[in-house]
Image (cartoon, rainbow, N blue to C red; front, side):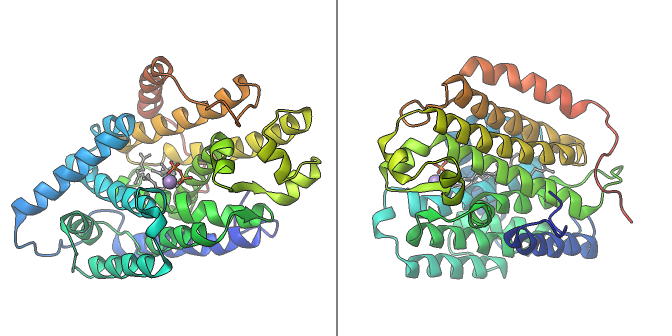
Length: 341
Ligand SMILES: CC(C)=CCC/C(C)=C/CC/C(C)=C/CC/C(C)=C/[C@@H]1[C@@H](COP(=O)(O)OP(=O)(O)O)[C@]1(C)CC/C=C(\C)CC/C=C(\C)CCC=C(C)C
Ligand SMILES: [Mn+2]
C-alpha cells in the first residue's frame, strides 16, 4: 500500500507525514554522520554507558545483538542506545512495575526524552542516546510517538478496525524503523528516494508488531486484551467470546489466514528497502526480517492454535537463517524502490 495514495487509511496518511518529516531532515542535514557531536565532559562515562547498552541488548535480544556486531562500531553503539531506550519504554507498561505506571509517569518519561534531545540526559543510558541523536539525523517525533503507544496501552484494549490497529502498530513498532534508518544509513549508491527507504523501515516495524500480535493472541487474551480488528473478527463470524474460549475452529483458521497474509504484505514491502541500506547494516535487518517471518510459518505449522501453543523459531532454524541473511545482505541488487525525482 502506498501510504500517500487515495486508498490509504487515514492512519497511514497521518504516519506518512512523519515519514516525510524524517526524510526531509535527512535530506536537509546530509545523509549521515554530519553532526557535530555535543561536547561530552566525560568520555569514559559515555563509553561505559554505551557498553552497558550493548550488554542490555545482548541480554534481551541475543540474535539481534550478534547482527549488530557486523555494523561499524559507531553505528552499533547508536543502535544499542536506541534499543535500550525502546526496551525501557516498553518495560514501563509491560515490566514488573507496570501496575504502578500512570499517565503522569509517562509524561515524566517524555520530559526526560525532551531533555536528552537538547543534551540534558537524566542518567547514563539516556546519556548514550543523547550522544547518538546529536550525531545522527534522528527526529524526536518517533520517540514521542512510541510513548504515545504506551499511553494507548494504558487505556485501550480493543481495536475497532485495521485503521486503529495500524496506528497502534506504528506507535509501538513502526517508530523503531524510523529511529533506526538514520543510523543504519542509506547506501551511497542507492537510487531510491529517502522517503521510500523510511517507508520500508516503517513497514518492517508494522510487520513485526502484527506478527507479535498474532503470536500472542492467547497471552493477550489472558490479560483481557484483544489486539485484533473487531470488524474483521465479525466478518468471519467471530467475537471476543471466541478468543476467550480459545478454540481453533474453521472460522478462526480462515480469519488467521487473512491476518497472516496481511502481515506478509508488510514484510514484502520492507524487503524492498533492505538493499538500499548501507552494506554493513543489512545483515541484522535481514536476520530480523527472516526470523520474524518464520513466526508466521510456525503459527501455520501449529494449525493456527495461537491460544495455547506459542509459535517460536527454534535454535536450529535461527542458526540456518543467519548465513542466509548474510548472503542476501552481500548480494548485489538493483533498486526496486521509488527512484529519486
Ligand atoms: C529499510 C529497512 C527495512 C530498514 C529496517 C528498519 C528497522 C531496523 C526496523 C526495525 C523494526 C523492529 C525490530 C521493530 C520492533 C518491533 C517490536 C517487536 C516492537 C515491540 C513493541 C511492543 O510490543 P509488545 O509489548 O506487544 O511485545 P513484547 O511482548 O513486549 O515483545 C516492542 C517491544 C517495542 C520496543 C522495541 C524494541 C525493544 C526493539 C527495538 C529495536 C531496535 C532499536 C533495533 C532495530 C534494529 C534491527 C536491526 C532489527
Ligand atoms: Mn512489551
